[in-house]
Image (cartoon, rainbow, N blue to C red; front, side, top):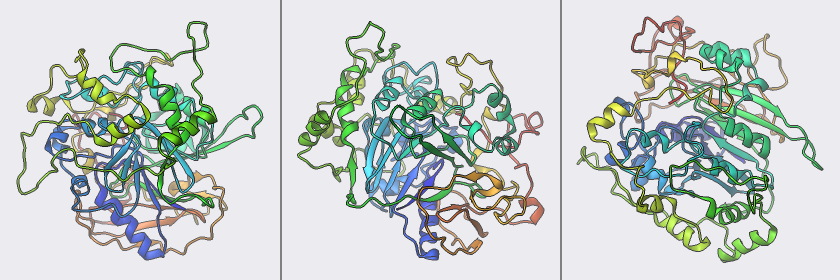
Length: 545
């Protein structure tokens, strides 16, 4: 099964699908599934824009609304997690996951599903220590605090995922597991992102919650985004009792921009006898039922139960009988129902509603799942709660414009006790999505300085070889991408493509600029920033909120 993995989407659905479609026609292949690692931006209308924490100048509709309204349909089954730039009111409707548009599925705050026998899990949001122990209390209209806290990872989701005992094939997170950079080409990473060095040296870059999950789940593949750089690593896990040692192949990808390494195609062996439908995972649903009473919709700190003599129960792993009961409640049908419906009017370009207020609707998909399994609809409960601290002081349009920019990094966190580090690229970047393509062109895998025989990413980064061995698909080194209609400027140039291994290929968008060779291969992209002269030596874009 061929799976396309994409980093930060930033609403560029048209461009991503067009690129995959071109590759399919050019090389005679068929991509079965697209995985997006956050910042998806499922914006349905103008009201949703006010619930997305981005600088006002980037608050644009992009192209998702076309798929939501039915104007277009996703040509490939798409699964995604949330990041830190999302229409949070929309995703909150689907706390346990669900369809945001036909053929586009959101995994929820955390989730595990199956597709063609492959078990795929994920956790949405990014880690911030000050919100980690809170419940999901946020509800629109958001105030300046909840506009951001709504997408911060919570310990209850990590606790649920740690109850999993059956192997996970693929796991998605937006931010990186802390410490993963020690298992890949670190100096190559620091060459591209110089301001990571202090955080790397203090081991404070990345999410400690994701690192905890990586150690527990030990999936075959782990895909991330957020830091806007491509990086591959190989994590060798110590063996668990009565089990063989496992290895995780980690890959982080960039955002969808010209000359950025944002897309990778990976082959994973098919499993005979598996369903072609997207399916619920019985173990995960049983865990949701078992932990339902632990969920909170209050901002007060909460710690999960531990084996410390203070809790009657601390182990919420589920038995085979519990899984069978879930299957019975679903009438033996694990296929996720195709029950998408619009819950708010979609954006109409011919009649824009600039002053539309954010919607506060529940979602029939969540209502149906909660009724079937006896789960709590967290979004509805948060809205009905007497403690409306999550929504008091809702933002006016003017306040949204001034409050929705990026906030400082929380790395390092108070969990590690590391000293603070300063990342000058975490200030508000004036033109984050208008960077000029001036990065150094990656070396070909045929470069004599790059060792042969392994799977290589551009720039000499080594991607560990996967389990399956598939004959390489002939590809020309240059792809003629047609000039598509999409939300960023049209792409007039050609897009290089590198055959990275016999089963993993990398796609890269072309530059929006046409100029001399030197200007296209410079090592430092030109970025417009406040106080540009102070930060002239910093070579890349923001990496956190």
